[in-house]
Amino acid sequence: MKTEEYLKKLTDQIRCAKARAAIAEEMRGHIDEQKHAYMSVGMEAEEAEEAAVKEMGDPVEAGSLLDGIHRPRMAWGMIGLIAVLSIAGFIILYLLQRNFSDMTFVTGSPVHFGGWAIAGFAGMIGACYLDYSRIGRWAKEIMLAASVVLLVGIEHYGTSINGAIGWIYGYQVNVKLLLFLFVPLYGAVLYQYRGEGKRAVVKGILWMAPAIMTALKIPSTATVLILFLAFMAVLSIAIYKNWFCVSRKAALGLLWLSAFLPAILFCLHIFTSGPPYQRARLWDMVHAGATVEKNTIRQILSDSQLIGSPNGGLGKVARLPGGSDYVLGYIAACYGILIAVAFATLMTVLFLYFLKLSLKQKNQLGMIMGCGCSLVLFFQLLVYILINIGIMPVGSVYCPFITYGRFGMLVTYVLLGLLLSIYRYQDVPLKMEKSVRKRRKRKPVSN
Image (cartoon, rainbow, N blue to C red; front, side, top):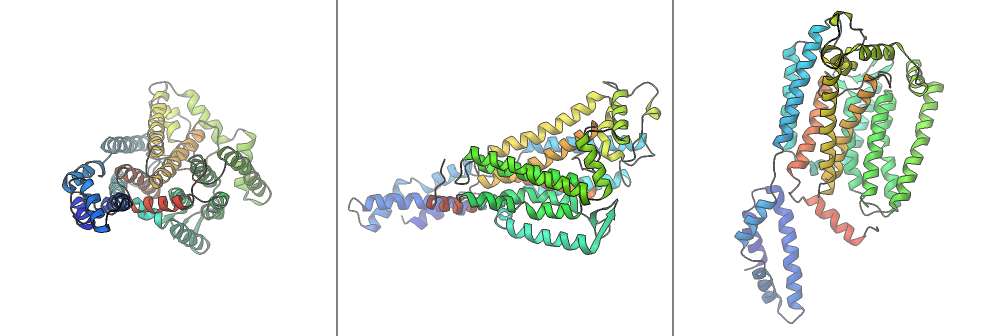
């Protein structure tokens, strides 16, 4: 039997079309190696090929075995947990809006809110079936094109709210939230530099610029902070995984030490020439001083009970102008601190679990893109928690599941969909992984 005939029978047994080409390439490599081994002991090429193919075993049996190993699988447990959190978040926001009619927790009717949640959840399932490696192949082009579109949109079609141009085309496109989709793309860009030397780390730092420059154009301090932390964490993971020809300890130490310099320069820029409201927020963050918002949220938490609302009912609960920025605080006021802590803990566990799963991925592209998605969700939640316990000033940060917002919901579900896609195809060999592996053989990475 010839090689191509054998591979045709073998791949016909594999139901996942995305896996067939990579498996065929892998098997062809084994056959070629064995063929050359036979030729080295005196066999003719045709005879050596037939012997090598015969040694591979029955193609139908081998293909069926590979089909069982390399096929997509759905993370139904995680999908169920996401559905539970989505429904719980909807119920909590609806109840809070009913209890505090003078504040904004949900814009529009519950049907309107539920419709966007269902649309986002459906989009997540759709993203789960996408081949994330195709996004990874075009990560550089997507990042640059998206940055240009967003910068042009901010400049010519931006809508200013309190000095920040967070929206373009009226209230149709939320720039701050869209920027978080750059983080998994950034991971895919780093993946393309695997096997390169120290310049790859420098290139990785430079590739942070498109998203961060766009966030500075808005400007949004909270968005810059989350993006910067996520980018730095993703780059640190790439260095720790020995992707580049550098000393891990030296590179990580220098990377994080040098991170303080742009942070200091950014703070100086805000203090010297930034908008007044940003200077006030930054000074409040650095000085740890008390503001009306901080005092109010601290009062809300101090008046809250472990379970249930305090004596006197909800009418005496202190109010904040931005109710949606303090949902966890109001959950504590209305239903008890333990309920708020439990909800925040459940989200934290979910995002860290996604991060753990991502770090364990054998496919390195899936690993780094999954880490990017998980870190964005985790840092969003972390900043939101710090705001809700009175440590950080309010910064209009979206929190997955418990903050209403059409774009926020869509971005969250897209990130979750990418994570599910990475999990779904974790046992499916992809072409991009194979091509990079070949390049690394030519230029090995030092440990």
